[in-house]
Picture 1 (cartoon, one colour):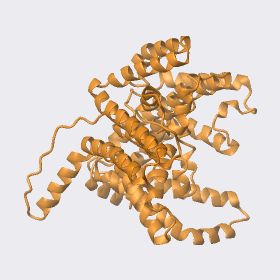
Picture 2 (cartoon, one colour):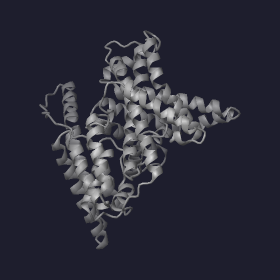
Picture 3 (cartoon, rainbow, N blue to C red):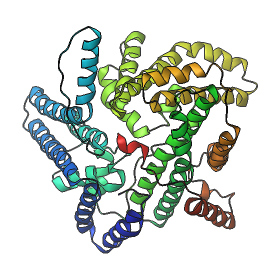
Length: 476
């Protein structure tokens, strides 16, 4: 059941909202558990089994950790419980998502060495959103172990925190400390919250349906070219760069908007990432809930930046490679993660030189900002080539074609892509200059202009949107 389907918009969502608004607090929670189960089971009811296992185990583990701490038992006892959670969660994720990948990779390596190890693979159906809900459940047990959050007494409250349908499939990844108090305590729905929620829903659908879905066939056709020229590669990367952003951030905006009109506040997941000035800045703006999860539960436990520059660089590379692998069981995702790790390390190494250039260009700060934004944007675009490519051979071929970036360029397709993304660029320039992501509430925009703006957005979404596509991040 996709957010952009008639089944969701005309059937599921109205029923959920009517039932939700008519019920008291505890009734709302029970109703949302039922609705979220139906929402998730609409893809395949069997997907509920691993989800129920994960939430049941982590609820029990968190309770045992807290009881162990209260009883004054040694730290080693709590570590055993935490280890059970980590191994079970990652083991389940590893089996469903990575077993065949590693088995096939091992077989290929053995074949290269002249060996036949007879590795078997299985027809494994990947449960939808397993990467998202695994990380969310794991953060709960880790936070309880660290003493940063108390274990909840109600399994159903925890189950709802993981299962709540707006964020379940593609995030944002919610921390228990942020979401559980909103579930446990009665929610008051404010007028401004509803207004912002409706704005996020409208803007999210516009980005998904008009921009991402119109760009998808252009990107798909260009990436399917068996002998790409430089022009084809540029078009492919250009289209996919904005497709994946509008697709994923569009989903996030819709999810945050749905949550707001029900009285919940989700964390911000995107903050103008293509205006980033360096690799670190990019990861403070792109998929913020994942990048902060990796920072807090992987990078810092590895040692972070505490043990000198060499270990810091190692930790950055490991974190980004594992972050790339989180996205999918394929070597291009590993390569994409490694690429961003190298960018982060490289930026740390050249920071002193960049600071010198910044001082030289101090009289023209806007020029220096533009140079950094443009440079980081181009580096990010190449990363999306690695991310979207279907094989390492395609990566090599498309990279080689960039030696002649204008060869075989399709001017009409480039113009179409530019026209499709133009409204996004205009809005994001306003957002960047004003510092206000909720751009329609700016005092400089009169009510009449807001009506016109939403009308144009609605028209483009309803009548000029592309053919409905599944959300890109559903595969992760």
